[in-house]
Amino acid sequence: MFNLFRPLEHRDRVQLLCWLTWAMMTNYHRSGAWPGIQYREQAIRRWLAAHEKSASWLETAQLSWIAAQLAHGNGSILETEAGRLELQLVTAIGIIDYERPVMRALYLQCDEKVAARGWTSGGSSA
Image 1 (tube, rainbow, N blue to C red):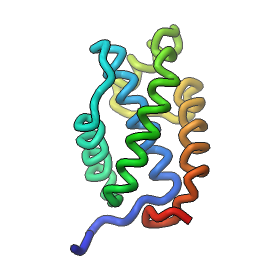
Image 2 (tube, rainbow, N blue to C red):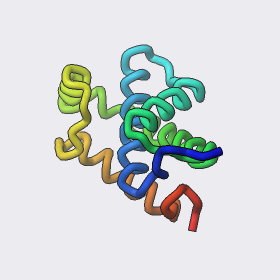
Image 3 (tube, helix red, strand yellow):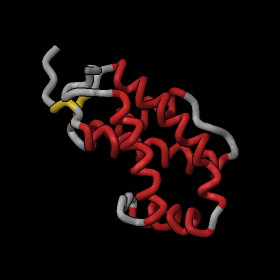
Image 4 (cartoon, one colour):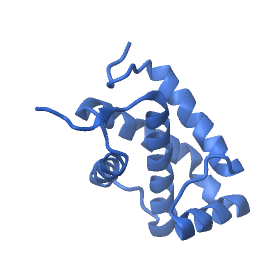
């Protein structure tokens, strides 16, 4: 099948992972329950479509799994004043600013996880 969208690059993966992790943390903060795989799959598809990118099912599954790990490890961020402020800002404007301190810390964790996977352009592992 021919795909019109370009495959993910390193920066795309980091931003998708950070966005998905944040979405999961936000969902947990609001509902008290961690979102399941269907939520993550739908969120990934929305992000890919919005950014006109493509990824294999394996790559999206791996990103989803990593996001779940990061979300569980960082869930307490939203219990802090800085985390709640960040949640309000992201909710109000709908954009994640990776230069703000809370998001920068999460972004760096995501970057580390993506780099450790050794993905090349197009989603395959090196």
